[in-house]
Length: 82
Image 1: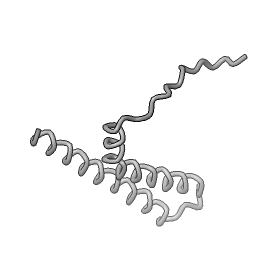
Image 2: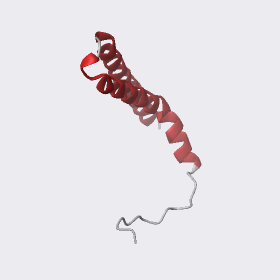
Image 3: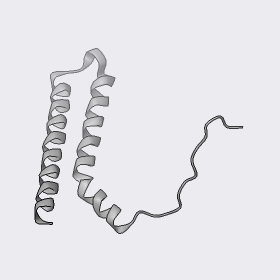
Image 4: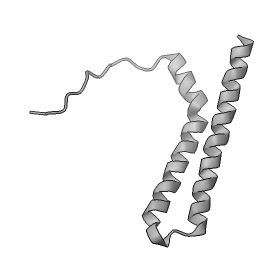
């Protein structure tokens, strides 16, 4: 007997609009995955983490911010057009 109750999984596939939204956000998703990878590497290095490891995390953080800003700007522009 499982003590974890899980909601029924919907068998619906994503709609074309959902797929377009995912595709539009993919650069941000990829940047966040890169940041996660850099943070994991930094944490795993522990006391042996180098300046290069920390720089990799900062660079990934900057990329997430820049990509998020670009995505927000594109969404704002598409709202102005509509």
